[in-house]
Image (tube, rainbow, N blue to C red; front, side, top):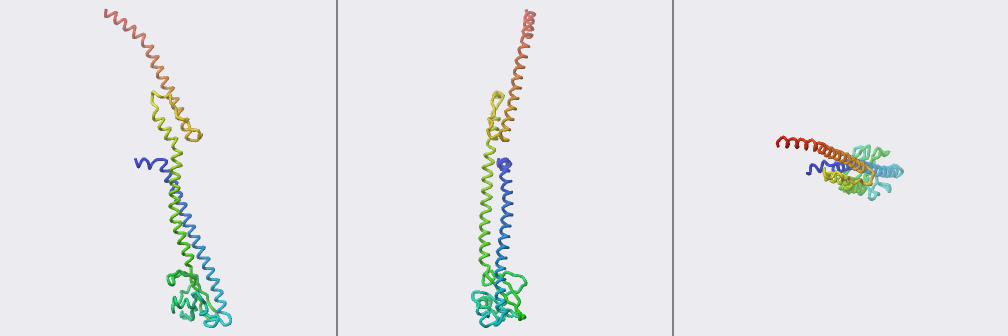
Amino acid sequence: MASRAFRSVRARTTLGATVVVAVALLIGAFSFYGILSSSIHASAERAAEQRLDELAERFDGPGGGPGGERGVDSLDDEIVQIIGEDGAVRAASEDARDELGSTALPLADQARTTTIGGEPMLVVSDDLENDETLVLAVSIEDGVETLSTVAVLLTVAVPLLLLLVAVTTWLVVGRALRPVTRIREEVDGITAEHLHRRVEVPPSSDEIAALATTMNRMLDRLDSSATAQRRFVSDASHELRSPLATIRQHAELAQA
């Protein structure tokens, strides 16, 4: 019974619609998440590089470099290091010393992500005029939290939407096929003694109404055939009655 129900038009239509919507939703969800992630990362990278350029101009200018009023030591709430050619840290902000000590930030031509003190950071670097490298690490925790929230929402929303699509499709298809079930039950109840009965044609003027009309035409032909058959049997019985009566009379006479 369960296998038969699964092979029904209602079940197959519901399954097909759910699978199609699931594929579309998954493609859309992954695409949206990827685009949002790229956008957030690009925005954080632009902001970091802009701040890096400001710091590079400051340290390359008069009175710049390690120490002094424009020195790295004067920066608050920023992780900044100046690294020499030998890879040693020449100067660092207070937050950089607290979090990294004498450990140098990773250098790369492109921005890269790392974790400092359990917090995700974006690291960018730029060369200074004195053959030193200025390295800046900015927090991207807000962006990571945003992506995490979006991922949770998508994980919850996609199954709920699929469930809604499946339930809606099941109900809509069931309602659409209800006249077919009624027609099948009515036709199943029509026997040779009740060929005068007809299927009710729904007023929808769709394929279901066309099916009901076709069924009624078939019942008309069956009724006409049954009527013709009964008429033929009646006529044949009438035609055979007189010869049989004559034969019977002759037989009785011969017997007498």
